[in-house]
Length: 330
View (cartoon, rainbow, N blue to C red):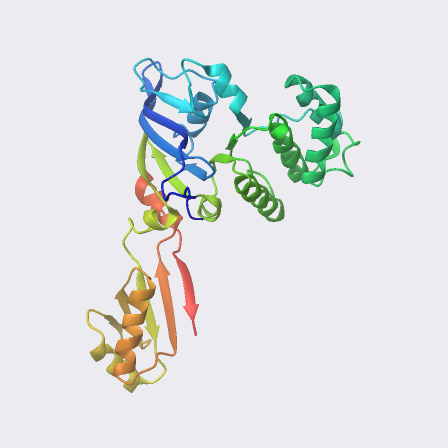
């Protein structure tokens, strides 16, 4: 998902920026100098192991917890967090890890309650509630107690409630945890639609696929610091191990290919060749051109590229790196 640009070619203004953000609890340094710049109208994903401080970042930026004295300037929605927290609250919406839905009342009543909390006039509140219930496909369930909703329905209602105040910045703290795959994909579509409307989404997630799918930029938080930040593709290039594997059925073609390609690792038993590669189109074309020049055609070409799982484990000191992603061309 490319980062939006303004018509003059410049990056959009920052929806969120922090300089030297710090937070400690007693002797424990949870955040130790976090610098962020998140352009408006983008999805930013914050990854990290459990206990890395992801939720603490969200709580500070949404005014629920104070940063430590000595932190640099923090701006959210164009407002100084320390000087004008009320303006920040008016610009944001927050959907936490645990649902804010009241199970004892209906979905519609939950929406109207949020409208009252935002001091919307009665008619405007009812109109807003009706529009959001329709947008999130909750009209049929609107009159039913929220206790009867599935996990995916409650999550949709949770986000609909967050949107009552028309925030331009939304914090989603692990919004799809516990959802089934269909509900998770539905949530992804909702997030894409929000961003297409110009909303900025700050996402924390345990699902690396989710960050890969949605985020314009990703930061990995470890030991209270940002270990790396960039697009998904930029982060993947930080991890070595990408390669191309060629398999041959004909031993003669295998030997010819081994001579044509330099720096290959041979497996004479399985008739496969492996050579380092970043998986780029240019590099693949170069390999295929060399095979064509030698009059050789591989029976199977497999591109192995590091994925965000590999990046996560490499940057956070994890073990047991999962299998690399593969794309096979036959």
